[in-house]
Image 1 (cartoon, rainbow, N blue to C red):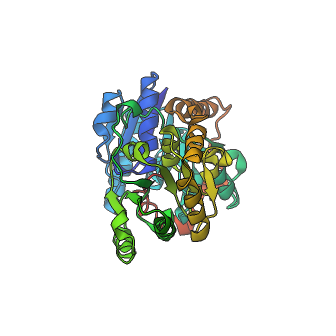
Image 2 (cartoon, one colour; image 1 turned 180 degrees about the horizontal axis):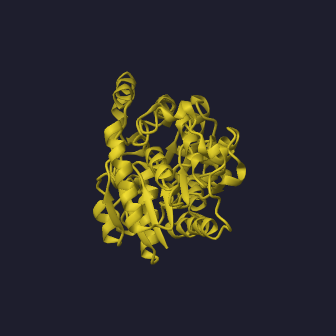
Image 3 (tube, rainbow, N blue to C red; image 1 turned 90 degrees about the vertical axis):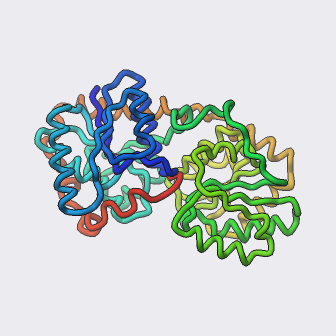
Length: 385
């Protein structure tokens, strides 16, 4: 099968959308498919090429002249490569592919990773929409997108070529009773609740330390928040790392305090690393943690509930051991191969449709006016989405 993926870039900065696209492209190519990635440059270009993926550079940055060039270039690529299916991961690429795949008609799949931005509604333009969780699908069907257009495929980061194998990773030497989060430094990740919740733990455990692994637009504000904490010496900003697993392997407790989260790739990685996990009960997070079987769920934006959960797990070594075992149970469903196999089923479903609709229905052919104005602004944002 000839598969073409399109996204803004292949930059390795913890963007879950890019990570999923890279994992899919590499796994599909390894399975014998003819795979092309159309994107701007990025750190992952050599990796996908090593796996036999053809990379075609197309700058998709927002400006009318540049997008006109990108549209023309994509039409050339489609005529030359004649892909069987196009898979769009971000909104700019989705719009370009939607315009270019109509004549000749090529099945178009969109991958809906986030529902936090109003322009996510644009992903409805595709013939099929892959939702990364049932929560994402339920949220978007409430906006009027037909349920039959959706297919749910949970992200599958395990076995990714992006990261070394767990047995080859040296755990990060962390101090004392270590609590770790791997997240973008932005309000959506709940850092403003995590810091005061940790202060409750630090007040009872003088060896407790919190490690904030990641970077983002609000980091300076969070650093200011931490600077006013009486426990600032035990709260560490680690920045972004290409190997977050070393922190997962080294920590006593892994926590994700997100206010919104479509699924949470880092939770799947933390499960694979055998972490004792605490996370907020919001959006797709319960699906990532098997609805509480693989980790402790707490209400979002609730400092007291988060603090009580942290105290409960931090103070009970036996409980942490039980939680580590539970986290790893059932992880085999989160592999790259499972994700790629399920995605291929969707491709085949479209290719074998008789006949494939000549035109998309009314909900597809009209761009949502409020969303079309901002298709690219947040495509490159987000860590571990």
